[in-house]
Image (cartoon, rainbow, N blue to C red; front, side, top):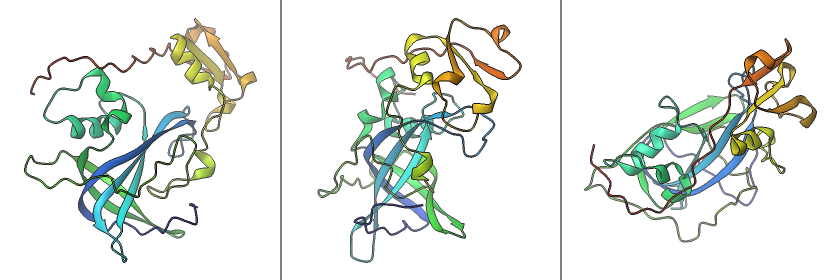
Length: 231
């Protein structure tokens, strides 16, 4: 893993810490490093400042890259539940940008590898009402959509480089269409010539192709004044 040399990085110690979401960015569709035989995933990076302090008294940061799926088994929903607790999840709550500046509890563990030791967010939980909150550090500068250099959660910038042009899976999501792509493309970014987008079903796939059913278009973020209901 590599990161910008101007960032003086120290690991958040293992244990439970308060974290404030200070940045989020869309990483685009990236290869599934854990299960390379599965299609690419649409990933989003979350960066938290914690109440842990480094050797010079500076706040320590931790990053988690999450799949932008609304599946109840996914990681994203665990963060959303912690952000909005005890209220119900509303459509606008799925937009991580709406949670910048909010605090949650983070359980940090260390992942030890031959290349180094990296802090991972093992679990996230809502803070009690009387728990101390922290603010985004005054000197923190948001990294922007194209930055993947911030350390944390064993990220590999070379494999998480954002897609510059609209990705075929993004196009399918926007249009509510299905997508067919070559099996040989699994585990790496899709090339235009390997993708077909349209009103397809699995019956339209060749033996060397994979068909994903129509992807529901994302609902736009709303600013409605609906009252939240307690769980």
